[in-house]
Image (cartoon, rainbow, N blue to C red; front, side, top):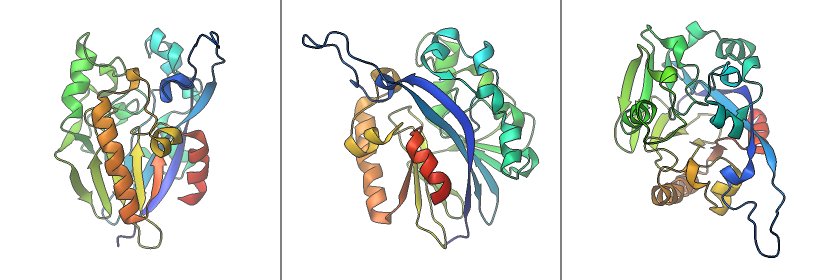
Length: 266
Protein backbone atom coordinates (compact mmCIF):
# COMPACT_ATOMS: atom_id res chain seq x y z
CA UNK A 1 0.00 0.00 0.00
CA UNK A 2 1.12 3.52 -0.73
CA UNK A 3 1.99 5.97 2.02
CA UNK A 4 -0.86 8.41 1.33
CA UNK A 5 -2.02 11.19 3.69
CA UNK A 6 -5.23 13.21 3.37
CA UNK A 7 -5.96 16.73 4.59
CA UNK A 8 -9.46 18.18 4.43
CA UNK A 9 -9.90 21.84 3.45
CA UNK A 10 -13.06 23.58 4.67
CA UNK A 11 -14.15 25.84 1.80
CA UNK A 12 -17.33 27.21 3.39
CA UNK A 13 -21.06 26.64 3.19
CA UNK A 14 -23.70 26.69 0.48
CA UNK A 15 -27.30 27.22 1.55
CA UNK A 16 -30.12 25.77 -0.54
CA UNK A 17 -33.52 24.12 -0.41
CA UNK A 18 -33.12 20.43 0.43
CA UNK A 19 -35.56 19.70 -2.41
CA UNK A 20 -32.68 20.31 -4.82
CA UNK A 21 -30.45 17.66 -3.27
CA UNK A 22 -33.10 15.08 -2.27
CA UNK A 23 -35.87 15.03 -4.85
CA UNK A 24 -39.33 15.29 -3.34
CA UNK A 25 -38.24 16.35 0.14
CA UNK A 26 -41.15 18.78 0.27
CA UNK A 27 -44.07 18.04 -2.06
CA UNK A 28 -47.45 19.75 -2.10
CA UNK A 29 -50.38 17.34 -1.88
CA UNK A 30 -54.14 17.63 -1.52
CA UNK A 31 -53.87 16.99 2.21
CA UNK A 32 -50.77 19.22 2.63
CA UNK A 33 -50.85 21.91 -0.07
CA UNK A 34 -48.23 24.10 1.61
CA UNK A 35 -45.44 21.85 2.93
CA UNK A 36 -42.63 23.22 5.04
CA UNK A 37 -39.32 23.52 3.18
CA UNK A 38 -35.90 22.88 4.67
CA UNK A 39 -33.40 25.59 3.78
CA UNK A 40 -30.17 23.89 4.82
CA UNK A 41 -26.40 24.34 4.89
CA UNK A 42 -24.14 22.15 2.77
CA UNK A 43 -20.36 21.82 2.98
CA UNK A 44 -17.89 22.80 0.29
CA UNK A 45 -14.55 21.05 0.71
CA UNK A 46 -11.32 20.13 -1.00
CA UNK A 47 -8.71 17.50 -0.24
CA UNK A 48 -4.95 17.67 -0.25
CA UNK A 49 -3.67 14.20 -1.11
CA UNK A 50 -0.03 13.58 -0.26
CA UNK A 51 1.32 10.66 -2.28
CA UNK A 52 4.90 9.38 -2.64
CA UNK A 53 5.02 11.12 -6.02
CA UNK A 54 3.10 14.36 -5.65
CA UNK A 55 0.98 16.71 -3.57
CA UNK A 56 -2.43 16.57 -5.25
CA UNK A 57 -5.28 19.03 -4.77
CA UNK A 58 -8.77 17.59 -5.20
CA UNK A 59 -11.01 20.33 -6.63
CA UNK A 60 -10.60 24.08 -6.11
CA UNK A 61 -13.94 25.23 -4.64
CA UNK A 62 -15.95 28.34 -5.47
CA UNK A 63 -14.64 31.65 -6.72
CA UNK A 64 -14.45 34.05 -3.73
CA UNK A 65 -16.61 36.61 -5.58
CA UNK A 66 -19.47 34.12 -6.04
CA UNK A 67 -21.84 36.33 -4.06
CA UNK A 68 -20.62 39.59 -5.60
CA UNK A 69 -21.89 39.03 -9.12
CA UNK A 70 -19.42 36.40 -10.31
CA UNK A 71 -22.10 33.71 -10.18
CA UNK A 72 -25.29 34.42 -12.17
CA UNK A 73 -27.92 35.90 -9.86
CA UNK A 74 -30.61 33.21 -10.38
CA UNK A 75 -28.10 30.46 -9.66
CA UNK A 76 -26.69 32.16 -6.58
CA UNK A 77 -30.24 32.75 -5.36
CA UNK A 78 -30.83 28.99 -5.47
CA UNK A 79 -27.39 27.91 -4.21
CA UNK A 80 -25.92 30.69 -2.10
CA UNK A 81 -22.28 30.17 -1.17
CA UNK A 82 -22.76 32.58 1.69
CA UNK A 83 -19.15 32.73 2.87
CA UNK A 84 -17.25 32.27 -0.38
CA UNK A 85 -15.51 35.62 0.17
CA UNK A 86 -14.01 34.22 3.39
CA UNK A 87 -12.53 31.21 1.60
CA UNK A 88 -10.05 32.13 -1.15
CA UNK A 89 -8.13 29.01 -2.12
CA UNK A 90 -4.68 30.36 -1.12
CA UNK A 91 -5.98 31.26 2.36
CA UNK A 92 -7.59 27.86 2.95
CA UNK A 93 -4.45 26.09 1.78
CA UNK A 94 -2.39 28.27 4.11
CA UNK A 95 -4.65 27.41 7.06
CA UNK A 96 -3.88 23.74 6.40
CA UNK A 97 -0.14 24.36 6.16
CA UNK A 98 0.19 24.47 2.38
CA UNK A 99 1.03 27.01 -0.28
CA UNK A 100 -0.21 27.13 -3.87
CA UNK A 101 3.36 26.40 -4.91
CA UNK A 102 3.20 23.10 -3.01
CA UNK A 103 0.50 21.76 -5.35
CA UNK A 104 2.01 19.42 -7.94
CA UNK A 105 -1.28 18.43 -9.60
CA UNK A 106 -5.01 19.15 -9.45
CA UNK A 107 -7.84 16.68 -9.96
CA UNK A 108 -11.11 18.29 -11.00
CA UNK A 109 -13.94 15.96 -10.02
CA UNK A 110 -16.06 18.03 -12.41
CA UNK A 111 -16.19 21.62 -13.60
CA UNK A 112 -19.29 22.99 -11.86
CA UNK A 113 -18.82 26.44 -10.43
CA UNK A 114 -18.51 25.29 -6.80
CA UNK A 115 -15.68 22.93 -7.74
CA UNK A 116 -13.69 24.80 -10.40
CA UNK A 117 -13.65 28.37 -9.07
CA UNK A 118 -9.99 28.28 -8.07
CA UNK A 119 -8.50 26.92 -11.28
CA UNK A 120 -7.45 30.44 -12.24
CA UNK A 121 -4.56 30.12 -9.78
CA UNK A 122 -2.97 27.48 -12.00
CA UNK A 123 -3.34 29.33 -15.30
CA UNK A 124 -0.09 29.68 -17.17
CA UNK A 125 1.67 27.09 -15.02
CA UNK A 126 2.84 23.55 -15.73
CA UNK A 127 0.67 22.09 -12.96
CA UNK A 128 -1.33 19.26 -14.57
CA UNK A 129 -5.12 19.56 -14.25
CA UNK A 130 -6.78 16.16 -14.47
CA UNK A 131 -10.28 16.08 -15.98
CA UNK A 132 -12.33 13.29 -17.51
CA UNK A 133 -12.71 13.17 -21.29
CA UNK A 134 -16.50 13.37 -20.97
CA UNK A 135 -16.42 16.43 -18.71
CA UNK A 136 -14.35 19.04 -20.51
CA UNK A 137 -16.34 19.21 -23.79
CA UNK A 138 -19.66 19.19 -21.91
CA UNK A 139 -18.46 22.04 -19.70
CA UNK A 140 -17.56 24.14 -22.74
CA UNK A 141 -20.79 23.19 -24.49
CA UNK A 142 -22.78 24.26 -21.43
CA UNK A 143 -20.85 27.46 -20.77
CA UNK A 144 -20.72 28.64 -24.39
CA UNK A 145 -24.27 27.83 -25.51
CA UNK A 146 -27.77 27.99 -24.09
CA UNK A 147 -27.84 24.18 -23.91
CA UNK A 148 -26.46 21.80 -21.29
CA UNK A 149 -26.20 22.89 -17.66
CA UNK A 150 -26.19 26.38 -16.18
CA UNK A 151 -23.78 25.30 -13.44
CA UNK A 152 -20.70 25.79 -15.65
CA UNK A 153 -18.95 29.16 -15.97
CA UNK A 154 -16.38 29.55 -18.73
CA UNK A 155 -14.54 32.08 -16.56
CA UNK A 156 -13.73 29.25 -14.14
CA UNK A 157 -11.94 26.95 -16.58
CA UNK A 158 -11.36 28.78 -19.88
CA UNK A 159 -7.73 29.50 -19.02
CA UNK A 160 -4.28 28.47 -20.19
CA UNK A 161 -4.33 25.27 -18.15
CA UNK A 162 -2.21 22.14 -18.49
CA UNK A 163 -5.12 19.75 -19.00
CA UNK A 164 -4.48 16.03 -18.52
CA UNK A 165 -7.42 14.11 -19.94
CA UNK A 166 -8.56 10.95 -18.14
CA UNK A 167 -10.15 8.25 -20.31
CA UNK A 168 -12.27 5.25 -19.44
CA UNK A 169 -13.63 3.99 -16.14
CA UNK A 170 -10.37 3.87 -14.18
CA UNK A 171 -6.97 5.54 -14.15
CA UNK A 172 -4.13 5.60 -11.63
CA UNK A 173 -2.06 8.73 -12.22
CA UNK A 174 -0.52 8.55 -8.73
CA UNK A 175 0.44 5.62 -6.55
CA UNK A 176 -2.46 4.83 -4.23
CA UNK A 177 -4.95 7.09 -6.03
CA UNK A 178 -7.30 5.33 -8.45
CA UNK A 179 -9.56 7.73 -10.34
CA UNK A 180 -13.06 6.45 -11.08
CA UNK A 181 -15.48 7.64 -13.76
CA UNK A 182 -18.84 8.17 -11.99
CA UNK A 183 -21.26 9.63 -14.57
CA UNK A 184 -24.72 10.78 -13.57
CA UNK A 185 -24.48 14.14 -11.85
CA UNK A 186 -22.37 15.22 -14.82
CA UNK A 187 -21.12 13.16 -17.79
CA UNK A 188 -17.52 13.23 -16.61
CA UNK A 189 -17.72 13.16 -12.83
CA UNK A 190 -14.57 11.73 -11.27
CA UNK A 191 -14.38 9.98 -7.93
CA UNK A 192 -11.45 8.14 -6.40
CA UNK A 193 -10.50 5.06 -4.45
CA UNK A 194 -7.58 6.07 -2.27
CA UNK A 195 -5.47 3.29 -0.77
CA UNK A 196 -3.53 4.07 2.40
CA UNK A 197 -0.88 2.00 4.14
CA UNK A 198 -2.02 2.50 7.74
CA UNK A 199 -5.76 3.19 7.37
CA UNK A 200 -8.86 1.93 5.58
CA UNK A 201 -9.30 2.91 1.94
CA UNK A 202 -11.29 6.06 1.17
CA UNK A 203 -13.91 6.10 -1.57
CA UNK A 204 -14.57 9.63 -2.80
CA UNK A 205 -17.95 9.58 -4.55
CA UNK A 206 -18.30 13.36 -4.40
CA UNK A 207 -21.35 14.78 -6.12
CA UNK A 208 -22.61 11.36 -7.15
CA UNK A 209 -24.20 11.78 -3.72
CA UNK A 210 -24.70 15.30 -2.40
CA UNK A 211 -25.92 13.95 0.93
CA UNK A 212 -26.25 10.63 2.74
CA UNK A 213 -29.86 10.12 1.61
CA UNK A 214 -28.67 9.97 -2.01
CA UNK A 215 -26.05 7.33 -1.32
CA UNK A 216 -27.52 5.28 1.51
CA UNK A 217 -31.21 5.39 0.59
CA UNK A 218 -30.89 5.72 -3.19
CA UNK A 219 -32.96 8.89 -3.24
CA UNK A 220 -31.92 10.89 -6.30
CA UNK A 221 -31.16 14.56 -6.52
CA UNK A 222 -33.63 16.79 -8.34
CA UNK A 223 -33.61 16.66 -12.13
CA UNK A 224 -31.79 20.00 -12.27
CA UNK A 225 -28.79 18.35 -10.58
CA UNK A 226 -28.69 15.20 -12.69
CA UNK A 227 -27.27 15.03 -16.19
CA UNK A 228 -28.60 11.48 -16.58
CA UNK A 229 -30.80 9.73 -14.02
CA UNK A 230 -30.22 6.22 -15.39
CA UNK A 231 -26.45 6.72 -15.41
CA UNK A 232 -26.67 8.04 -11.84
CA UNK A 233 -28.42 4.88 -10.65
CA UNK A 234 -25.94 2.60 -12.41
CA UNK A 235 -23.06 4.55 -10.92
CA UNK A 236 -24.59 4.36 -7.44
CA UNK A 237 -24.77 0.58 -7.64
CA UNK A 238 -21.15 0.40 -8.84
CA UNK A 239 -19.95 2.75 -6.09
CA UNK A 240 -21.67 0.69 -3.40
CA UNK A 241 -20.01 -2.44 -4.78
CA UNK A 242 -16.59 -0.74 -4.70
CA UNK A 243 -17.25 0.31 -1.11
CA UNK A 244 -18.23 -3.24 -0.15
CA UNK A 245 -15.27 -4.93 -1.83
CA UNK A 246 -12.76 -2.54 -0.28
CA UNK A 247 -14.45 -1.88 3.07
CA UNK A 248 -13.92 1.79 2.26
CA UNK A 249 -14.90 4.98 4.07
CA UNK A 250 -17.19 6.98 1.77
CA UNK A 251 -16.73 10.71 1.21
CA UNK A 252 -19.90 12.45 0.00
CA UNK A 253 -20.26 15.63 -2.02
CA UNK A 254 -21.78 18.19 0.33
CA UNK A 255 -23.27 16.41 3.36
CA UNK A 256 -22.46 18.67 6.33
CA UNK A 257 -22.66 15.93 8.97
CA UNK A 258 -20.39 13.62 6.96
CA UNK A 259 -18.00 16.50 6.29
CA UNK A 260 -17.68 17.22 10.02
CA UNK A 261 -17.07 13.53 10.63
CA UNK A 262 -14.47 13.10 7.92
CA UNK A 263 -12.30 15.89 9.31
CA UNK A 264 -11.48 13.62 12.24
CA UNK A 265 -11.74 10.25 10.44
CA UNK A 266 -9.35 11.13 7.62
